[in-house]
Image 1 (cartoon, rainbow, N blue to C red):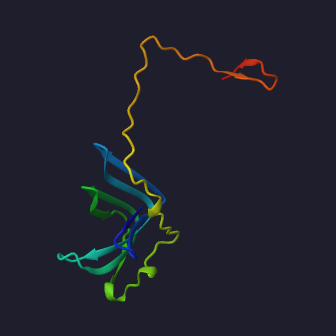
Image 2: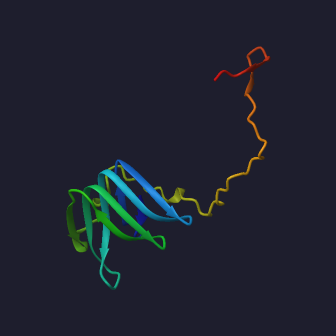
Image 3: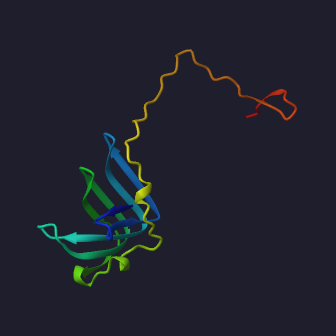
Length: 141
């Protein structure tokens, strides 16, 4: 997961297994299970950068509110280092395997998926395919 802070800085989270949860089509929580790593830019009450926090933790729970990270809990065995912003070069704070793919993000919202209603008398037909000779054959299960 990647959140651009500015043109050079990126808050990042990665782990072995990441699951996202949605409420009313809005991201509400992300759970990271195993090999969790995070880099995020800490700010003061005036929103100025104060440092970069690099944390590794077995599991991470991220709460999202209004499309922004609201809270991060490092569940098991957290190990953190906070580097003052004056000592932090953005290139030194990229997780292994980091790729800036923000240009590939969709720019329009995709329509919400809606299930279709099948008629009550609907019964699936057996699939048929053509053999190499062009004859129809029934597929075996």
